[in-house]
Length: 117
Length: 114
Image 1: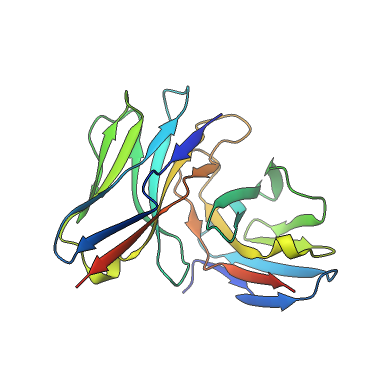
Image 2: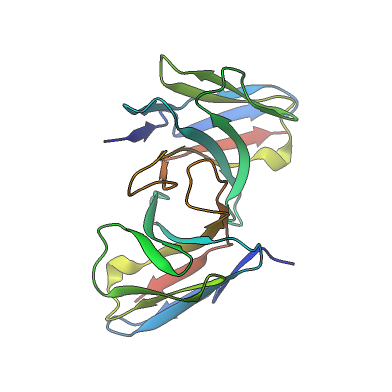
């Protein structure tokens, strides 16, 4: 069964510094999608970044980038120039490529990121 | 305009009651979902509908019954509420059920059963 593991329950970063959140997953599929979602205290789930497994190039969205290592089944999120507004829970998610659960997101347990001024 | 909106945002009710949470999306998406986030913040899918038809039904008690009157709406009705049903329930939508489609979430409905 597909699983998503976030091994860091909590992380802390100084404002303007860079932080990397880890995520590993388990799947026997070759094509799939991976996502990072942010959940601030308001509880709104906000998409941060997505990655297609068939693309070797790492996805980037402004200050957010990923390090996608397909062979290692690793999908880490790097936040550069951290801002106070980045403080939130970050969830890594895997999307089933096809079958009865196609499109379903499997979430990790989340990493709580604190940003220190 | 809110893309995925759900009501109520907060709901406190007694055990044994029946309650509903409504969800509407104005994105023109074909697929809608209900996810549950428990007290430990673990998120898990409950149901998925595509064009008003059920496509994903995870292991959820029969007390939970989703209804999709049209593809822009997916409501969740819960019978005989139990303490363990206390959670945040997220409605979401995507363009289609395909894996590559981004899922957009509502703001969540925080249900407390006392």
